[in-house]
Image (cartoon, rainbow, N blue to C red; front, side, top):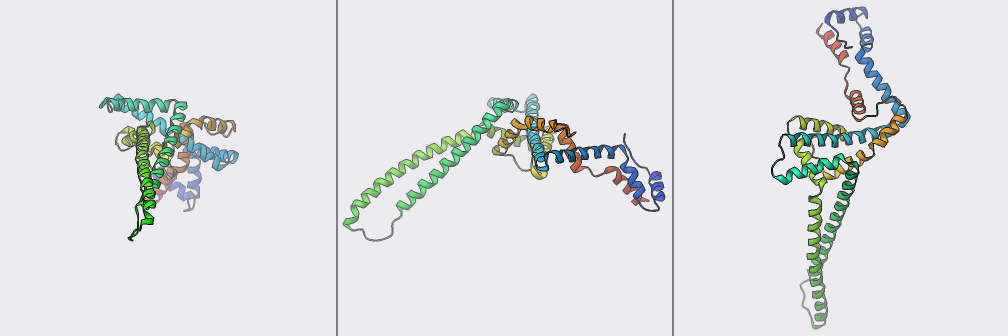
Length: 287
């Protein structure tokens, strides 16, 4: 099932084509590898015609997101088995918590929404504090001029307002600290942290996770750290991907509706460089 051209075959094909490569190209295209690749191309093309290119890309992206989370879970379990996270003890419990959330889609959805909600609250608390501090700064500013008796009452009221505002600022800072604590201790923050730890490694777990991240991100970028917010979008995809795959399968496109096979088919189409034909060209150049 594998076709590899030799020197004698390359010579004969070039001679048969009168010095042109048309005959050689025709034969290479009939090889099993090329035929299998063309089947993949046709299947993807049919899927695009049936669902629309944008819909298909959305499904593939959702599958890639799910695959990243599952690969992260596998990597963490593998590292746990090797004692990677044994110390301190609470680190181990955090990792188990991440694995539990990823494995339970309902919990994954719930925690994802929880993180996004807490993040929005944190932004709100921070913006409120900035507003109060700006107000305090404006009140404390006064031009250099001589105050007369008519301003004394106004100054008293201003001092009361400043004291009240300072109290609000202190209260707001406590609220902000609580929001920061809630976000920093959230399971999705931990998930992003441990994902980046794995990605920064050089073992088999790191390579597998890097490959999964390249599939999940537009442009195949895998060297940038993942954020908790990015992982919430992956979680959203993972909770709806079964429905998306089922819709694709019901269309009868011929594309396998499983995570690995669909991704592999699309990756083959995108990265395959007609290796057999390149081998032939290399032989011709040598000749």
